[in-house]
Length: 242
Image (cartoon, rainbow, N blue to C red; front, side, top):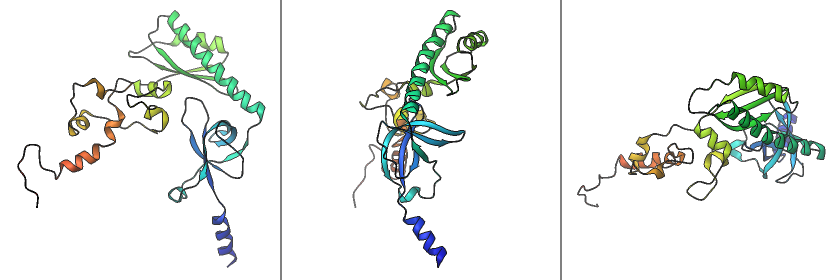
């Protein structure tokens, strides 16, 4: 009886989720939060795989849905101090300036690449440079220059067109923020078959997203069209309603 009472008491404790992003280009992730008075725009200290980190609240606190009660979420430890919040903002400003510096150094060496983003670790010992390039790039000399510039270990990480657009963000032809930047967690394979199934003209440039690749939204209704095509009559076929 004591164990049952204890279990019921634990289950009765209200649990909430709150959306926190650790870096500005990243999407907010859900964290468990207790009785902290946090609002959108505030900063908090959260659990991470490497320990703890400061993040910005992007989605307000909401009750934990029944469908997610079995999932494991990292927790919000506490509200960040003013000093920690300022450090977070200052590091992002350093990253923006570092991206400009990296692009200038690459241009000086006639390297055909586009610097997408720069991630500087809080201790400043590691700098990760995200870049996009159509062809293979020999960036060994660039890495040496950047290591001297930032006094840190440099990691160059190439990303594709979709990941580049995800980081850069933008507005889609629908007039809303890009799906990949706002809520899409991962990229699914998109094929011409999806456009054909939905009777969309393959020569229409409107099939391409901001990244120059087939739009991710071609996937959203593809399964419905495919299912309907399995039992609906073909176009032009004579049929009679029962």
